[in-house]
Length: 522
Image: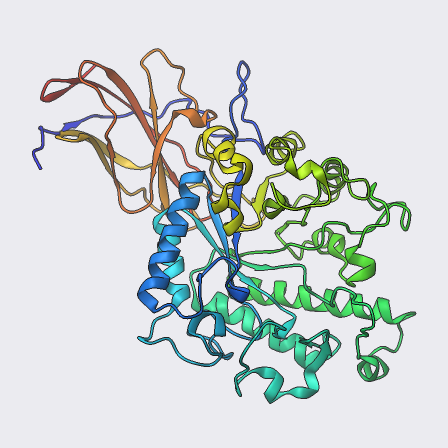
């Protein structure tokens, strides 16, 4: 490819502003689209909901499908994916004590052929696209009622004394210390062996009530329940012990890995507890699933909470806004991501509000107004379907401009240093920017990726405005601006961003005019 001679500049740091708020970024004169916002999607593997599309695909087909999913979600505007890597006593990754998943290979315990490690591939492909990868583990299931095979390596076969049978499922008995240790071990194993950005659990703790079914844990309660007023208190304590134990294990292994949970949307109803949400007779995490989700954020055991607010704004028992308001006030300084039920948009729902094409876009807007740090959509397949044009609203409006993942100051508050030695050259297909990595910051980190800003000569440079983000460089110290036009002037700045998305001061300005076959400084 033909190159025009390089122009290098001695560049000065400026008063380029780097702060970003939760929702809308501002300076003293302007309001911009959000500069920082968590935008994520759940990719469910159980029963082949989202990926792979069939349990009978060969590895090449599985890889192609997953790469296409990532490309789709990146174009929509996402910056993170939650991939279910443990669906029911199984694994979608090689370095596991549990058997391979039936929904990956067609039979639980059967190795992929040819052999590969799906999670290593998924992490690598996600990071290439600038997507955080969160390993989503279901922590209560050993056997799913839709499973067609159960391996002899399934823990329900090895330790039947750990198991509760309930409504066709085999579930862990959380009252047993050895069960809590096993779950902690498989979770910490993922953190030790894979370059994940986060560990994630869903809403399945003790099971959702089913008529005619009972949780058979009386013997465990008699052995371990002394000192508790009720069995419900004991069950909640079992879950608390597990959540804290996993938090402690992850902190000891890699304190920068994010840990979060997506519980049932309602903690408690106000009619049951005056500190509960303005919701009315709804199923509650605390009372019905024995999961004290508010306590986890209050104690700092999780880095974020992502309650499943799968309700419309006009649903009487659980109005969407009431629940978002409550969680905003009860996240105790941790991140609050709103879990959104994209699967309900345009579906056959009793609540007719889901037929309104403005419902889901307005839910995203309300989460921003309430300064939630972002949203997670369930699930990937629902976004692919683009019911009522919802995904078009994301791509063309709500997520039109890129957003950096919000920082977590309690995990890392030290930004990287500035990139060095910024240069530019003209190619046949655009203007190439290239630079050198920054020196290590005081915490030893350099850059994980870079943000490239472009301004008009008359603009006031600011990092608040994501509309000025030309792109991001995730692999190496190079970026090609393929939109330059001859006869126009451009001003570039580049910042370094570390693994937890702290953004450093820029190198810049680089001021160039594009002329026929050459660049000129101005």
